[in-house]
Length: 94
Length: 471
Image (cartoon, rainbow over all chains, first blue to last red; front, side, top):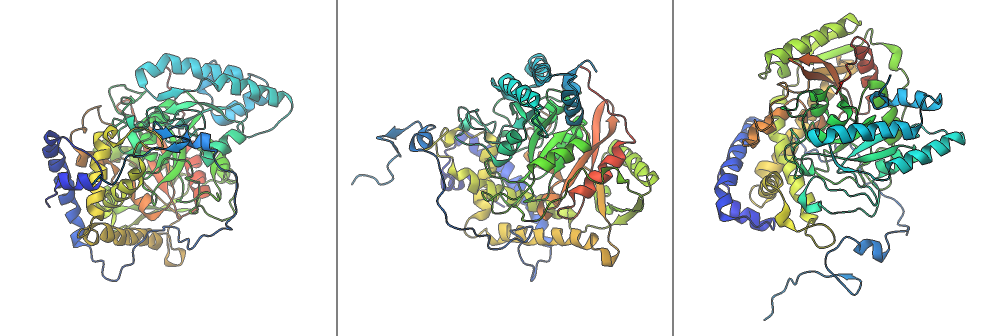
């Protein structure tokens, strides 16, 4: 199986140096071909398991409770402005 | 005993209660051992400056007749457990200077039980790894022989307990990250049933697999510890609502008449000769204790690693998407190679056109692996009470040996990933040494059968002598 590491990295918002690509490509392709093992398993009519202990629809009352103060919430950011998180622009200027 | 840091939880409790020592003395003895050994072993990323204050407070409470199960007992936390005000890095440069605003539920419970927090232990960054070498803070070394890996990802916690830097330490196990290092360091490691212990405040790796457990010096300590950490948490919707037993009860009941299964697939899968020999010895002991050994079959075992290394990176790619360097931590350029590999792999297996062939298929194979265990544990069909198997197919390897070959590293999880895929508990128990390096085996049982695992582990442990690493 071929993997376009550059394209997938972009999807995952990772920037890789071009010289790193061949190494990752080789390693990931080796791993992906190991996954071919699963091709021999018959999974016809088999359900998926996503909640392994079988819990379903766990709900609770929607009740307000104490939470972090604004100051605490902002305490770990490196970019803030007027008591808010400052984020990079996502729309380009026309 | 001269060295207080060698004590188990149970012994520490007795020493403190009988006033043979204070928590300040006990904690100081651990801190001295950390100071002496950590530069070499690299088990701790951060040592808490508040440990002695906490010990003083514990001594005060005890003199006021306060009774708490861990009052004044020094423990360490894998550095993936959020600790309010104490740096938490996940051993990644992304979180190199991150100071959490709140405690993980388990950390809160341990503090409420009176534990003294010595500090935060090293790991493979984000818990990705089987050797401890993927840490951005340098590899942890195996205290029994520093040229060897201690196993991962909970490398620092295993090494810290083995080298008596603390009485016990926490870990996480999504594919073997507690059991493997426990077997490599002569410590007892518990991977509880999925959902028995809260994941809240523990940095998420693979949310459908992550199990929150611990390392101790004895099986009894492991049961004592689980009594504190287990239970429902409104902050983690996947935690169980079941009424839970006292895990220390029935420890001494013995194992006469129990049926114990040996999965024939495990032993057919290319296992080191010395490991096989060590396992056969353990098997003989268990038989002598009166258990009936029965060969069983878990036919889908050979697909577990492929299944695991699709599901795990898929969930990793989703969980690590939150690290954007905006609200906390550094940006995504700070991820190390292994995190990059898993993010890319997971993004790929979840992407349009590949989801069905990889992720969905793996989740279906997961069902078959889970069914294998259900079948084997099914009493009306003549099922067994528990299973025992080796933890690792090989003894510990040398630092650097598998670093350039991720697939080879992944294959060291061949015997451990099945328990996570099936959500069942596993207890890794020491079974002696091979050429000076520790070995261990795991006891697996049905979901929520921890009490039985402790009963079996304790019975076996009584046939062994606890070897204290004297360094």
